[in-house]
Image 1 (cartoon, rainbow, N blue to C red):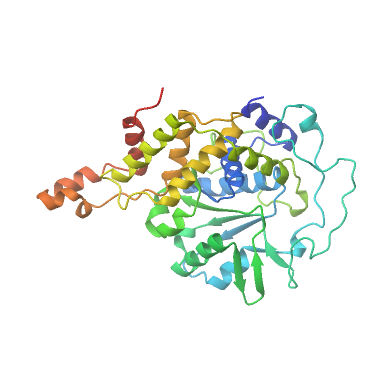
Image 2: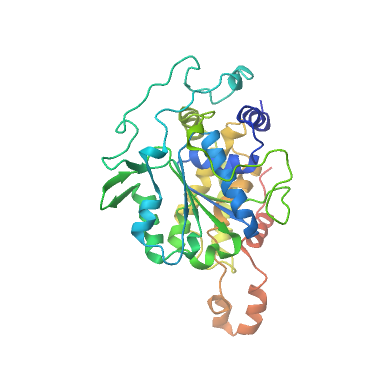
Length: 366
């Protein structure tokens, strides 16, 4: 059964038509144990996109969620408190998994152990659910709005959380859960202007989302309209953590042939040497490039990397990490090139155009 058929089953069971590309992007990040950036071309899509992400996390993965709104005056203490959830906001147990999803497809590849539909869920204590003595802990998914408007201190604090997987506050030490996903939701044009390059480099992929049928007010014309606020008691796990772990295990055994590996290497070299890119490409980005290829293969039901998956991974991995150079940085200035002429040359380049240029130049293995 192909990926689209499996997603269609999830949509039918969940009861809403979520965006397939957005779901696959979140799932690939979870399989790789990494974090993702979601961008929109128009600010009027921000609210709709946030609701879609929260619905997928809550109604498909059974994740607890938090939405954070940053501002220029947001302090590190305010930010730390906003990304934590309290025990009162989370139900004592999750609703069990309906069996209909897996009864329809015996060959479903991620068929790890799941909750028995006949089992009565027991109430867990506060400590068993990961809360500290103050009744706080990390949620599984954090959506951050306006991160580009936050101060350098807040961005540095977030970078420390991503690096160390823990947060130290006056109320104690908080450890991120095994399934933990941070998603900054940003306007596409502001992403590289106001965020640390080191922070951007710690995000696995970037996904540009645009609703297919949104009117001028930002609402969808379809039959299903997402709620303004998600009720905390409707957590349901249609895609369990063990399912994600099974995909992660398959990803480690994906075969990357010598020709495909050379193709990947050529893309990395061409990006590093491209005259429109400032600072080249980091080693972390190259590692994430291969990791994303491995994560995408089992999602497409194959155990080997293909050129088409490599192209998808390159666009998702590098687009938010590319910084366009300035005329003064161009090496031809050393040999007498005029800055004005270089400005006209540089102004036409964007990260997406650079990626198109590189992918069109590098020969594809046959």
